Image 1 (tube, one colour):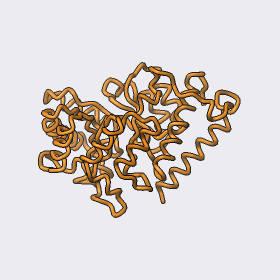
Image 2 (cartoon, helix red, strand yellow):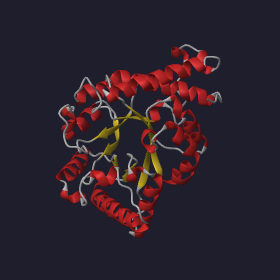
Image 3 (cartoon, rainbow, N blue to C red):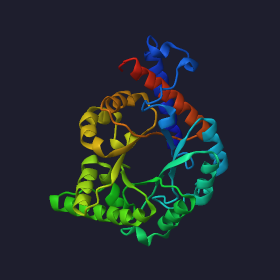
Amino acid sequence: MKMINEYVLMVAAAVIFVILHVPTVLAKPMGCIESAPAGSLWTHDNLHVWEVANRDLKKRGPDERARMLKQRGIKHYAYLSRQDPFGVQPDINTSQLDIDAEIEAMQRSGIDIRAWYFWVNTNDPADDPNITKTFEAFKRHRIHPQVWVPQSHAQSEMAYTIFPKTQEEQQRRVNHEAERIRLLVKLAEPYGLKVNLYNHGGWFGVEENQLAILDRLKEFRVTNVGMVFNFPHARETYEDLQQEFPQIWRRIKPYVVAVNMDVNPYYLELMRIVEASGWKGPVGILARGGDAEVDVRYNLTALDWLAAELRHGVSQ
């Protein structure tokens, strides 16, 4: 129910945004808004869709999901693996559990699997057979997606609710997470895979802490780890993120390998900052619940409207 309510609020916000901006670009009928031109960050060719399988109330299987994405013109895909922080939920889309079927379906539809998201719920990733199993599937199918990793939920209380109270505790946390990521990098390297940190809230999702982890990794001579910046997980409120984003982006831009967002008018100014900075990289749009096809179609249309606003220099 919470997921559906968030989706309704997002759509309502977009409708209000359109009404307020009718005198400019958005005065055009929806069908007249063109997608961003080639070379733009916001062109459909640069997009990947994200959290499609697990949030699809129709629970499509891999082939049906791949065909749906292809029909929408999607060329890239980021996949949420089955390594869920709270185990397999009763309502999980069971098609998520078949790694080979997911890869093969996307390959048949000509869709590139750009990234694969892992909950690494162990201090040593080599102890989790699902990780090696997935890497071996990548090898069989000759793909090399980015590996996205958030905090471990092996100690969920530590990951989410408890922040270090002293500098010594902070350093121990940095060292602990850096070692976990170092071991994942070591495991991934023979498969030609690149590991990136994902800001999924909590202590691990704070950019200063991720930068500290990256600095610690450099001391281990691990220098090829990047960051995936997800707008919805960056701050508790839109207002906080908007106020702090210029400073955040300056610090993290050199490390960011992808930006993810639910397409929301609140993010227009953030999109403007990213674009104006000259950053070039892939952009992800999130499914937020409901019928995944409707969700993807909405997000593509909303993104085209926001990109048109940026091209025409319209501010909120």
